[in-house]
Image 1 (cartoon, rainbow over the protein chains, first blue to last red):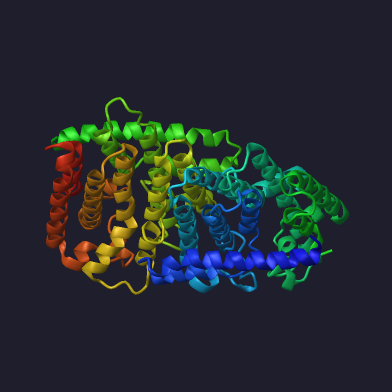
Image 2 (cartoon, chains in turn orange, brown):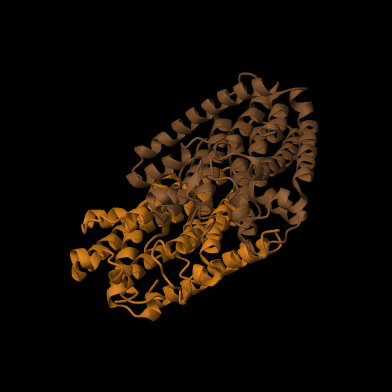
Length: 297
Length: 297
């Protein structure tokens, strides 16, 4: 799959995810939830974005699912992942955290709905993620709940955000890697793993999904840091240089731009090696891994 | 069970819950979570409190569990409920919400750890609740996750908090009932239901737990409102008159003090009728229901 084919593949997957998210968000309207809360949840959930986590989950499930099996559990998992990712973005943008006014080119939740409602919309999306995952009788759902809970919590995403806002962040590569392995990596890894779990994949496939997710999670973050230095506001959906302006350590700032590219490319190689036995040469997961560093070069 | 026996029963149950919470919170320390985050989570989790939700869950499970069965799932559920309740208190106290400086007689989380860390400690406790519930192979765990997720989300606890901070709150009994059925009632009902579910109770028992939880949830809130008017800061663990000062509608303000008592007592009667077939006359659940309105009379 070359870059052009991947673009078209991703567009198809994004439409697929948008449709799934709409179908899973629709019941909220008629659920008896306060109208303004449902609005705030939909505002952030349906604001576009790359949909990387649900796509990873679905592609791993597509790759490993026995032909003719139902994708329903994988689809619930994909949506639950994006619910959690969306909740984390809403909270990260809050005045007491990153204090961002723009997200995906639109005003952030607290700018539109106020700070209290933004916090609560995030909280409610988090609950809904587990409603989705836990509704159904398939035994794997409980394992999926555990995976999502661990990866989103104190030893995962939230732990990473704590490291990211800490005042005594050392400008060291090890710290930066740990921070991003928790803050973004944990949920990306979970996305890959949950796709395998939903498809009933083997322990070997699960371990490979784990390695792949870890590698592309880091590659993606390095590329994001590089974009923050070299990219355009349009490509980013947020102001350029925001990370540097916020006094945030980035890979280019800590190890230099060229070493950042080298590290990102090593991670891509690790990702390719992990998934080749699963999808053969040149499948979508390999193309996605290469895309992590190619999108802005 | 008279009031004195109930007091001693509740003390025993509270010690039981404290021990369970400590055992479930301990792994956090060595989990690789950022130290300050683990501290903030423990600070709020182990700050005492009535532990009403976990006690309800445990007592329902005690009542319905076949002799000799393991209470492990019920204990996980009890702790998960208190994790979620604690997270909700941390977020409710935030400057953009109720802006409270004191909780259970101690400075609130954001006063001690800062606003960002308080938000994240709440978020992480929410994740950990589902880690607890989903860790284990018992098939009921997935249903317990669903119950907790639904009751804590947009059509439950968070939805209630949204109604509570809305600017256009009508001073009407129906609105007040709906608000509290969501804000506190949903999780109290879930506590009762989850105890029954963990014990493998019947559909009839589940429906009775539901009615009981709904009735005492409302009775408890009415009593709390009455305490805010008539109680002492010591009994409340927060300043007296805080609700009224915050311009919050209370049952006494909307229907008067005497009608509030009458409503609370009717709810207690409903609760007693619901649980008598489960525990016989004069069991701990009946005593607890009576205690809801008697604690300050």
